[in-house]
Length: 303
Image 1 (cartoon, rainbow, N blue to C red):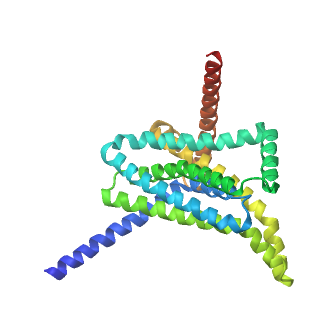
Image 2: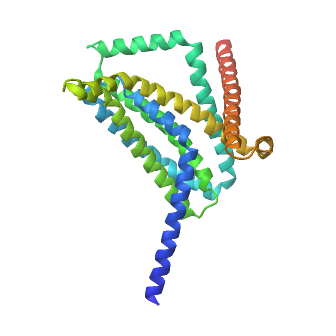
Image 3: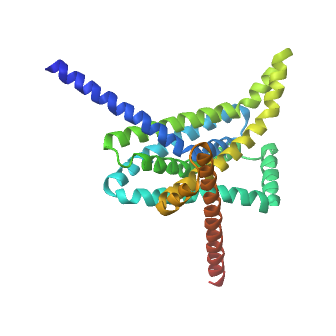
């Protein structure tokens, strides 16, 4: 009987782990947009740090990210246990924020080019200035990166929670912990690799032959990699954020499904419809935020 009970327990554990693996995979797909943006943003946050300090800075931010997730995972579990009705509104808010963040990046790029160029010039000047307090600047970068990570981690956890909201507590816990761990290790491992690409390229260029050619290719391709990550992350924001919003409004979701043909064309059409919904939602939220800021500024000026 004891042997049979042990086998039953092992079978139950295997079943739970299998369910957790499937749910984790689904949650990872849902959070792809945030992951791409998280990777690009954090890689950009640590650029401009002295070469011998890049990895320590990445490690400091990674530790801050782990602390963020130790706060967010229990909070998410508490919400799913005591306020389950809040999961869908939080997902919709997270989706709207993704769309807003993506649209704001595009709007800022095209409407504030002079400001972006000025910030870049100030950034490069600060790097070259020996009088700048390097330690203080490094701490500021780390704090900013951890603050950004908290926002993006909150989005990741909320989106993951939406996938497992109807599951038992143990499975919710295991999936959220798996997602939080994988995202932290994966993102900051890749960030560490990306920020050291230029060092690898320089090292290879001094070796001669094929390795030198590979090094030059790495140096030429690294900036394009950063741009590609940023573009892919922004596109995924609209796809994922728009998809969340569309699925959160069943009438809209069913209407889109009814208009699309079955098969691959239908899937492509659904993705484009989600992206279009995400772009529209991002524009609306950005307009509302801009109006609120103007009204608040006018009110403050009047006082």
